Length: 515
Image 1: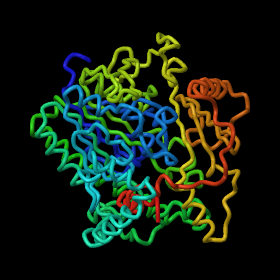
Image 2: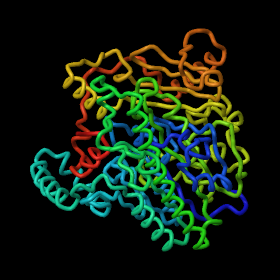
Image 3: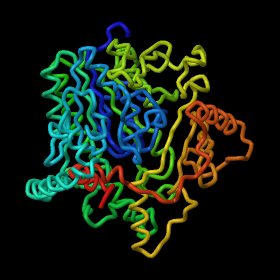
């Protein structure tokens, strides 16, 4: 812990927000004036890399300090199990912990909220207190036990009826104001706190509040533009330049709404005298594609608009400046432990895996990224390349793939089995180059210094930078159990998602994962 280290942490994830749509990163539209002001007293990281391109594995990495292949949470196994989380460690150390979000992947059902003293998912019907503790375990047992499934189905049916009555047409309404209000109340009642919030406005579908829509997408009817990425990715629907402009305008409006609410939260922290004693982290878990590489959304690839994410951190040990060195979101796990002077490493259950504080992974440590001094027996898989590299993993997304197949079939199309849509991918990235190993199609590699748009695949061409990155990726793959070289079977199912309670599935529908 550094001298004068804050006693509280506010950790904000702006879900699905690209860094190039934010004013502190040079965007020419005024989407984020509050973040621009925040950047004047924070460190702005230009080269922050997410460990995966979508919510569940990224948050599991943030909460465990592990790469996706280590913690194992993905769509084919949407549970974080057998690990001790950051919240569990901090709660055991005497910190008050809370998680507020309306993301259906961040729930007690997936165990991502394990260890938080208070949490709410802001679902319309089954709120956090229902989906936590013994009730959550009982509900999972009912759904997983065939003899009890009929009873669970009846409860689901009642929940459907209640949801239709209470939610009406408002399920797309932003939950962010309620998240901010709940966060303020939690912090106000806490002495030492870790507050984690996920703000979902910039995730499809885009239906921004009217005042922001009028500024950033005037005259655009959000119900008329394509809000289903699978329709476009399957080839069932085309999007012309004008419609892309409308979609991007709605996206900007959603980001502006997030910024407005963050400004409200930051102003309250300052007025209440808590600002100086709070480390504030603002990042995205992943970005979004709007037609680049002929893709829409955040599936089926590891391009930089998805994985090179915004990250701004306010901490007295960090200069209010910009940093060009590469960092990983996974490092934030250690940064929080270091800031709050908690060593961690003690499992909350006898068989749990747990990651202890490693100051070579802490952004606020003088030894940050000094991996060359770490012995091989103590290295985590990502401590390769003397701190210059970041690593990304992507197991195929069964929910999106099923939706993609359905959209294609409805249009009389077939998705080729040898395509990126069925592929697993791993990448190593450094500032000047990236190499992506793909199990069904040709590998991809890019010289990011010369080709930041990743338009020219130079895999196999003997480029010395690319060759060095590929060699480091191979080292990482060996450390996590070997490369994904054998393609999985074409057949995919989302039985694990089918086992989720009905309200979680309804929230996934709200977000466009299910229909």
